[in-house]
Amino acid sequence: MLPILKTTPDKINDKVIVCGDPGRVDKISKFIDDVEEVAYNREYKVINGKYNGQAITVVSHGVGAAGAAVCFEEIIKGGAKEIIRVGTAGSLDLKIKDGDIVISEAAIREDGLTEQLIKKEYPAVADMDLTRNLISAANDIADKQIQSGIILTVGAFYPEIEALPNNYYSEAGALAVEMEASVLFVIASLHGVAASGIFAIDGIAIDFDADSYNPHRDKVDEAIKNSSIIALEAITL
Image 1 (tube, one colour):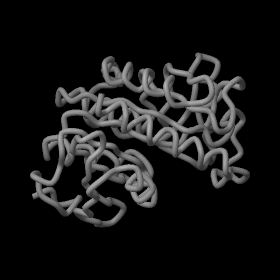
Image 2 (image 1 turned 180 degrees about the vertical axis):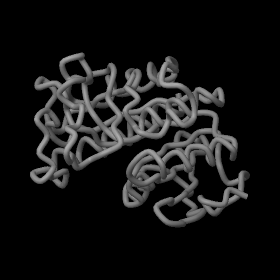
Image 3 (image 1 turned 90 degrees about the vertical axis):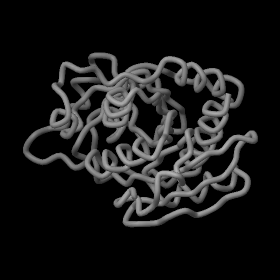
Image 4 (image 1 turned 30 degrees about the vertical axis):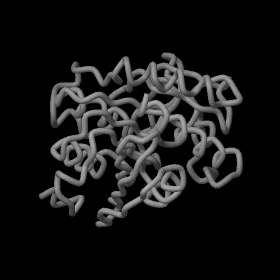
C-alpha cells in the first residue's frame, strides 16, 4: 500500500509525470488515451493512461517540499523509473519572459527539506538522458527559444523578515525559481531513478513582490500546455 497516495504499487507505471496542481492532472489527461482515475487523496490525484502507446502515470504533489517529497517517495516505492516534473517557475533572468519555457539541468537546494535526507553537499542534478529528451522534444514542439540550466528551489513563497534568495542566485546564473525540483532530483538520485523538470515561466521573480503575482494568464496557460506535451513526448522517446 502507498498510504498517502491511497493506492497500490501496481497502479504506478514506470513512466510518471508529476505536477503541483490536481487541476493540471485533468488538463494533462486530455492529451493521453485510455485515462483511468486511480486515486485522489488530499492534494494527490493519480491517473493512468497511454501516450504514444506507452503506459503513463500522472500524479499531483501539491505546493512545496514536504508534501511533494511524500509523493516522490511513494511513486518510487510503486516502481517509477522515470519522472518528469511539469511546473511553473518565476524567471531569475530578465531575458526569460512570461510564457517562456525553462528545462532544469540541476537545482539549488534551498528547499528546506532535503538536508534532512542527505547533507547539502550532495547535488540535486537532473538525469542527463531524460533532460536531453526534453530539450529535443521542446525544440520540435515549442515556437520559441527554450532555455536550459540551473534553477533554484526554495521552501518559502511569501517573504517575511528574511528575504528570499532569488536575487542572490540570479546573480549566480540561476534561470528560474520554483519549490519542488531539488526535492525530486535528490530523492530520485538516492533511489537510482531518472528525473528531470520542465517549467512554464509565470512571472519575474527578481525583486519578487508576492502580492502582485498572477499566474492566471493566457500566455502562461499556453506555456503549461506546451510543457505538458513536451514532457509526454520526452518520457516516451
